[in-house]
Length: 287
Image (tube, rainbow, N blue to C red; front, side):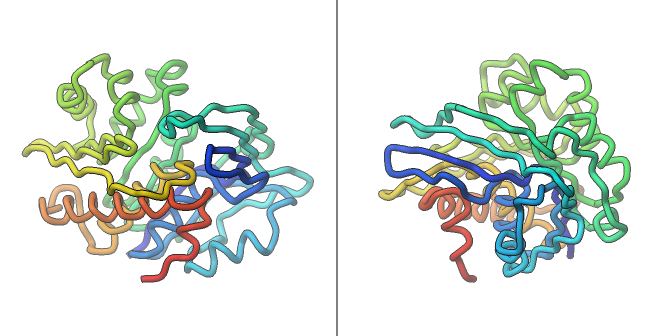
């Protein structure tokens, strides 16, 4: 089994009521890859600059993540994001964004990445998501997005959503996309756009899975020690899709048991993620 993820690779600076970090490894492709690596072979695709060195590559490669398709742009700087959280850890307040090499990102996939069994289209421009989808023959394709693309490129995003099997958004984004205030109705409206599976990520309250046959909701694991929620959604996606790829599930043939177990693994990885800053806690996990 093999799984390709296309998304951001970043350095993050984050402050929460429980501490701060001035520079830590982050980005959607990183959080997703580390979580999914517990279940399958992961190939990460994304751009980095000269400041992304052997230590950063070693973190991914030590977990078996294939890094051949991480493009190192000579003379460039890696995507940088600075943010802070108040006591409501569900809301990130962005203080600074430097797109750097990510601003000119044109995904370049090797044959191995194009022929992977599963594909995760991280939160990048919908037009790029469509281009990557067009290059791949994966049997299971999932997509994440955000409010920015819903507001500014809705038609292109809708076209991208129509081409995937699974849509993964947080509950607010799902409501915004469909203009349905009720979560169940929003999920049904999203399925009418094309995907057979819709997953609504609900932060500390867990996640909800919707298919044509019904729905399944799983609560978030109640934690006493929460440090930083950055990357929790991508860690959830990595656990969810990584498990499904690891057991060889296809959308048409995925059993309720497989889908529900995938939700549980996603919740577990997200819960571990928030116990440390950035990807620090997940880096220490063993199976």
